[in-house]
Image (cartoon, rainbow over all chains, first blue to last red):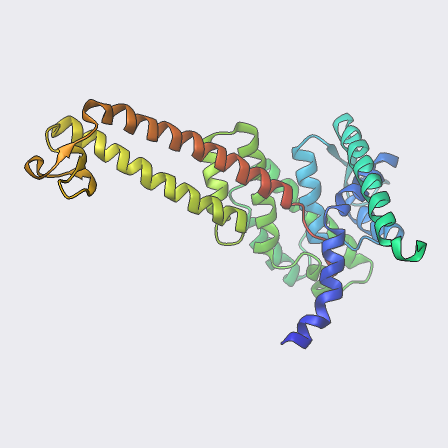
Length: 121
Length: 193
C-alpha cells in the first residue's frame, strides 16, 4: 500500500504545487487576446506546462466569469464552422492578474532564494 | 444541435440532469460549450471515451458548476441560509465545512437550550432558573424550588437573549469564514487526462 502511495506521490505533489497556478496562467493567457476553452487547454499544456483537464478548465472559467474577471461571447470564426465560446479579460480580471502576478513573483523569489541556499554556501 | 456518438449523448444527458439546479440559460450555455468542446476533440480524431475522460463523470463535472454557483451566490448575498446551504452541502467532502458544521451544531444546541429556558421561565417562573443545591451542586433548568436556591431570577431573560445573540453572531461569522475558506480552496486542482 505504501509502495503504491510512493508511486503516485510525485504526481500528487506536482498537482499540489500547480494548484492555484492554473488560474494565474489562464488570466495571463487571456490578457493577450480572447481564447476559447480548448485553445486555452492546449496553450497552457504546450507553453506553460500546466496540465489542466477539460473538466477543470470550464468550471474555472465559469467561476472567473461569475466573479466578473472574464466575460464570454459565442463566435463563429469562419462560415460553416462550429460556434465557439470565447473568453476575454475584464478590467477586474486585469487588476486581479496584476495582484496575483505580484504575489507569485514575490513568493517565487523568496522561495527560490531559500531553496538555493545550499548551492550558495 | 445534431446528435453525436451515443456514449457522448448519454454523458451529456446525465450532465444536463445533474445541472438541474442551475437556471436554464446558464445550464444550456454550459451544455453547449461542453458539446462544442467534445465535437471539436472528436473531429480531431479522439475517441469518445478519451474525450470524456478529460471531464470525468458527468455528475462530478456538474457538481463543480453547482458548487461554484452556490459559493458565489452565498458570498454575494451573505444570507445565512445560503451560507448554511454551502456548508451543509459540502459537509461530507470538505474538512472546513465539517468543522464549521460541528461548530454550528454546538451553537445550535446552546440556542435551543436558551430558547427552552426562556419559554420555561415565562410559563413556570418559580421553578425555571439556575439553581444551587445545599450540597454545592448547580443545575440549569426546571427543578423543585424546595431543594435549591435560584441564583439569577429575572436576569435569566437577558442571559438567554445574550446566548441567542452571541450564537447567532458567532454562527454567522463561522459560516462566512467557512464559505470564504471553501471558496479560496475551491480553485480546481490541475490533473492529467
